[in-house]
Image 1 (cartoon, one colour):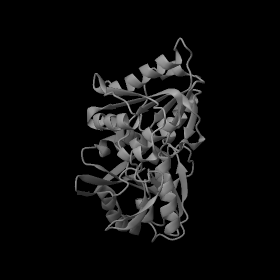
Image 2: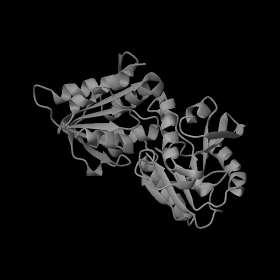
Image 3: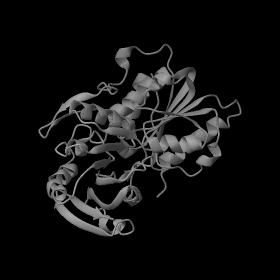
Image 4: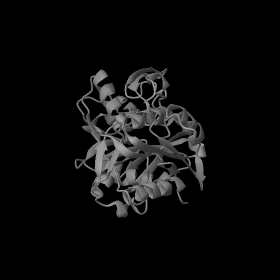
Length: 352
C-alpha cells in the first residue's frame, strides 16, 4: 500500500532542491520513517541535512552522502534553514518539541512543512502549530496524507506561546507498580512496563535453571532496559544492550547505572555492529516499521539473534500473538518452543 505521507515528503524535498531560485538549506526531520522509493535522486545532495533519533535511518542517509545528525532531536548543533520538513511522530510531546525547535531554526523567510495522516493527529497538530506560527492556514489533503505549511512569524512569539513538551529532553523517574525506572517521551512505551516483556521475564527462571552457565547476555532492542534489569540475579555475566533509538539507549544507560549493573549499551541497527556470540539473548521486537505492521522487521531480529548465537544459546522472544513467529523462525533456528501465552502475547524459546 502506498504511503502518501512519504511520497509527499519526497515531492517536497525534490521541489526544494531543484528550485529555480536555488535550493537553499533544507532540514529533514526523520523519526520512524520507512525507506522511500526514489531517495537515490537525492544522492550526494549537499543542500539537505537530516536529523534523526534512529540509527538505521541515519546510516541510510549517510550512505546517500547526505549530512546526518544522530541525536534525540537535539537541534543545538544545527544551523538555520530555508525549509524544514517533518512527518509527525507518534509521540505527541516529541512532535511539539520538533515544531518548537523548527521555529527557532528557520531563516526569516523560512517555511516549515508538517505532514501526517488523520489518524496521526495531523489536524489538531496543525491547528496548534498555526497558533504558534501565527498563521491563518489549515492542513490540505493529498490522498491519505495531509500537509500544513507555516512561514516563520516576525517578530518571534513569546516563550509562553510555544507548544507544551512536558520537558521532552529530560529523563524522569517513573513510579510504576512493577518497578521504578527512568524514561522519557520518545522511548516506546516510555511510561509503561510492557506486559509482553513481563511475560518473558516470568519465563526466565526455568530456562536459566537448565542452562550449564550464562556468561553473556544480549538484550536485542532494549528500550529503557527492563529485560536486562531482570537478569540482575545472574552473576558475572558480560552484558550488552542495543537499540535503534537514541532516547532508549540514554534511558537504559541511566537505569543500569542506578541498578549498579555493568552493561555495554550501543545505538545500533539490530545489533549489526556486534560480532561476539552470547549464551542468552532476550528480545521483544517491534512489529511496526514506521507506521506500518511489518513481518519483515520481526525476521530481521530473528536473523540477528541467529547470527549472534552459538549452538548452546537460548534465545527468548516475546511477540504479539498475531505474529507467526514459529513460521518466521524456521529459516534461522532448528527448534522453537512455546513457553507461555497470555494477554495477547506469546513467549518462545528458540535454539540454533
